[in-house]
Image (cartoon, rainbow, N blue to C red):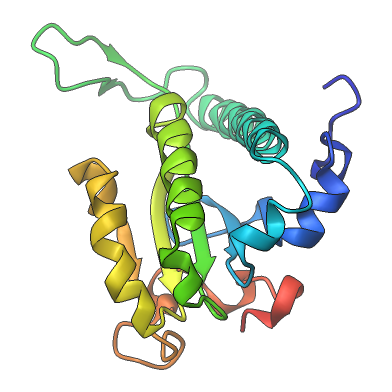
Length: 212
């Protein structure tokens, strides 16, 4: 990977990870659909962040992060495919590869991510013009270039202000992406719709702010 085999090594990666805490990928922590987990924390103020780094700095880091995830997903999928081939003596059951009329039978494993977005600390400044520009640019870049990366997104610790900004975010998302989002308040661990229905407790990371 040209020496960029760790997010801390990405351009300005160490600084950005301090300013915008996140776990780019946890390949060995998975949800109940066997999707690797990513964690993002939103206890930061975009106006403050971009007084230290530029938009360009952050978006270079974002693209490196998405490509890094793509490489890991590809490696995990290839490893699982080898296990599948061994299980069926190189003759695995075939499945329809798409919903197209002329689709062919084949086999393979397509992996997506399970993203946990922790909104604890999110304030009303997320509605500022700088914040909305940040949100729009990030969603635009990810949706255009990596539309099928996310299998499920869990938004936890959603404060009241998120209800105000969510309609703006929904306008930027495709319907299929909106349907992947599960929103929880601070009771996400104990409510009847607990996140544990999707992720085993032992697979929820405790680093970067003690998520659980």
